[in-house]
Length: 188
Image 1 (cartoon, rainbow, N blue to C red):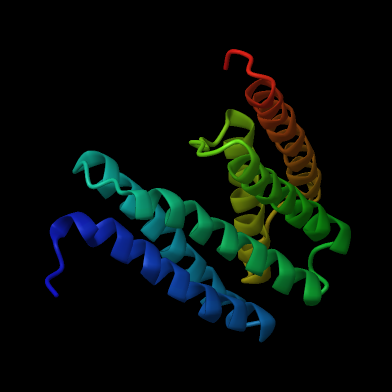
Image 2 (cartoon, rainbow, N blue to C red):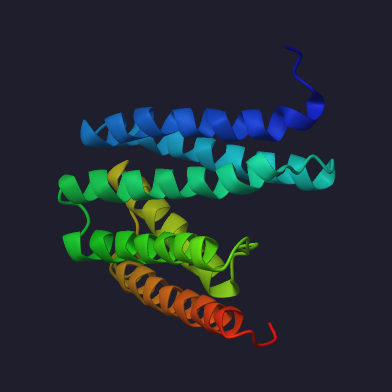
């Protein structure tokens, strides 16, 4: 089997998925500098695969589905490990996880009861993910010895909580409305 250039973004995404285990291991063993560098590599790979997919028109259905799942898997794993290590509060991790479960359950329900859909991330969804990535990066940097101001870490908890709640509610309202209109034969 020959690898075509257009598959490079997908290969990068899969390689990012393989970084999740080593990042989790380093965090669990409190090897924070190593975790920091691996997290940077994961972030750079996310930027690179997205850039290549757009700039070279190498977008694919596989990439459109796998890339955000890779990001979510990485974030959820890091939240869980840092909560286990008692770095993050349990309630925050449960909130982030609950939001994701609600969105996935809603998408699956919509697909089963209404039909195919094109799930696009909303502005609130993007802000929620950005706040999670920024917060986790600040936490890992702090653990690795790069001193972060306390307001950034404490405020980050509340920004992540707020954007998770708002984006979760936004998706429920948006897709709930679409579901209602589709089930009642109303215009989309």
